[in-house]
Image (cartoon, rainbow over all chains, first blue to last red; front, top):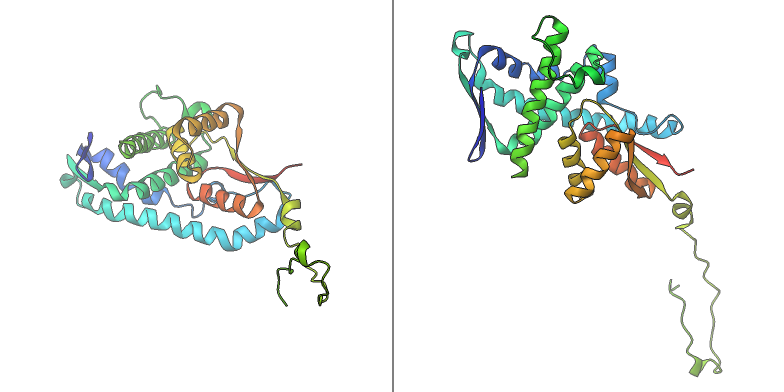
Length: 163
Length: 111
């Protein structure tokens, strides 16, 4: 896989089917449905316990806005990922082009996905910082790899935004 | 009735004048003054990337990079950092923005 900035696009080329599939999983991975721990992490409380009135108002007025904000980001990313649609064979060494104006949507969707996966798997800080972990041997390992891969993409996009 | 009371200059103070009933103005800022200050606190999160958190602080608070990095490191090392202090309404707005970036942020009243 290669990732580079090309004019107004971020280009991810030579994508093998495995990484292409991980990319296609971003919107689904960001979904908190049926995962209370993930829902709790994405929609956190604005205060620590004592401000019950504020917390109730937050749930009623702010959370729906945030939900819309997050959905808009995952929808944008989902639309970009349609470039990768096709059968397994056609996924071999594909290229994904992300318009730089979608960079914020990608940062949000990748972050949502990382947080949801981490919450669902209850990853510890130690696991999340273990970048020398052995090859994928379980579903949990795969989820951790997914979190790190999405983190790598975030880092690249951030670096490009900084330029 | 004018909201601003007429100022009688010393020169004309001795002269007879018609003075209306005094205007009683409500102290509308008293509650806000008592409300001060509230903190905007960001809490540590092992998932959010350090570079991402720095970018969010720059964007939300308009901090220069070195200040944003200092706060990010404080969050990382001490578990929390106070990013801003002031009136409640604005503090809530900042927390909403920070939640929009998926950071763990709360408002806290200074005890």
